[in-house]
Length: 224
Ligand SMILES: C[S@@+](CC[C@H](N)C(=O)[O-])C[C@H]1O[C@@H](n2cnc3c(N)ncnc32)[C@H](O)[C@@H]1O
Image (tube, rainbow, N blue to C red; front, top):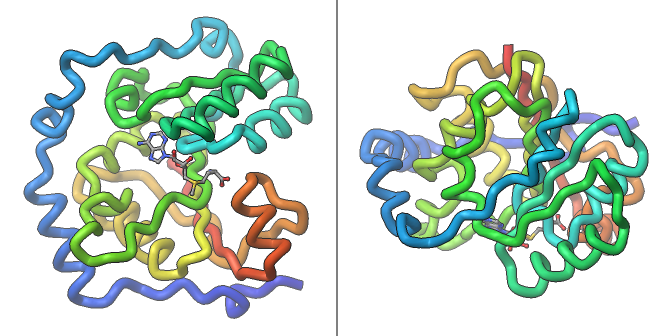
């Protein structure tokens, strides 16, 4: 049986807490979004909204998760978004080849798209293995510090899940702290924090980590 002690998720230290809180105080989402004001932002395919249960996979890589889950749950809609040239393009090809009516892909940056999505419209938002942006000078790019962070929970319906996985325990600890303490985030409760409970790998990165024997963890929150 997998126990939490197999992948302990630490609380962030005082320095990280102070840095996160400073980033949240200074965050100005509208100013941040100005960089995209002249860029075309693709629309979410209309049929995605026809499904009553909808999931968004952010940074979906080559689309393994949305394709597999879409096949298992044909009554649910899965939208994957990835901005990477190689992964985003491959994902689009794979989604096109699978030709499943409930699986959708967008090859774009998710950040300017998120504020355009209707609040209370998603049942799950997942982020599998984001770049941890290890150097301190880059930590503003982590989800926990980012001005877009408080938008994510607002997209969920009551009962909806926000899920993040990482092989970096510190990253999960910071994310948990941010979701539970960000002044603009309310009504989110932790439903799981510990090692991943997977043997196969929901995504390409997860499959690689499992094959290598790299321990990974997961935090899941539910919107009240
Ligand atoms: C480490 S990979 C993980 C891919 C996949 N989730 C997996 O587990 O196999 C992180 C992915 O996030 C994507 N990504 C990072 N920031 C993004 C953004 N702002 N919008 C869309 N995709 C993003 C990258 O292009 C990359 O494919």
